[in-house]
Structure formats: structure tokens, C-alpha cells
Length: 84
Image 1 (cartoon, rainbow, N blue to C red):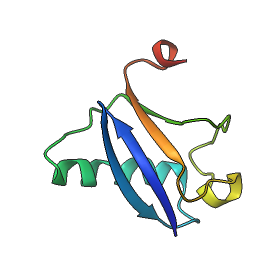
Image 2 (tube, rainbow, N blue to C red):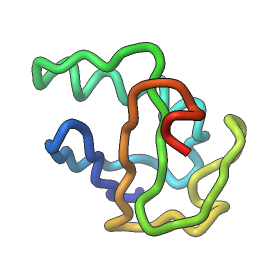
Image 3 (cartoon, one colour):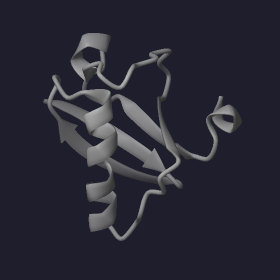
Image 4 (cartoon, rainbow, N blue to C red):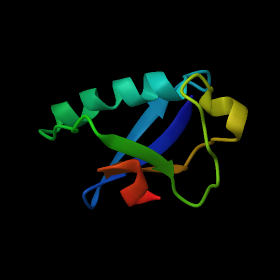
């Protein structure tokens, strides 16, 4: 398991996920913990690791890219070109 910290709208949320979880599956699962905390994620969000230059495809597993405990994953809303 990997402990990640999600950053969204100046809020943080710690989650535990399996190392073999695909980036696509993580994206799908993220909506649940936010809904439990009364926050809905829009459909046009983008995930970006803070302080890492990792670019992952949807089918890539987190553990294969050196993602480890304490890594922070920021959630951006909007067009990809606005975030990059």
C-alpha cells in the first residue's frame, strides 16, 4: 500500500492505495473519498504529482514509477493546456 496526500482547493486528504493500482483506476476511485467529505470532483480534472516529473499513461501502475508513501497528488480543474 502507498499513502498519498491529495491536494484540492486548499484541502488535503490522505488515502491509502495499492502499489499495483493503475493511474486510470485511481482517477476513477478519487471521486468517492471527496463525495464522502461533501466535495464533488468535476469531470474535467487533471492529476499531477507535486515535486515529481512523472508522466503516466492511464494503464501504468503507481508502483512502477517510484510513487511512494508521502507523495502528494494535486488535482487541477480545467483544460490540460491551462494547467501545463
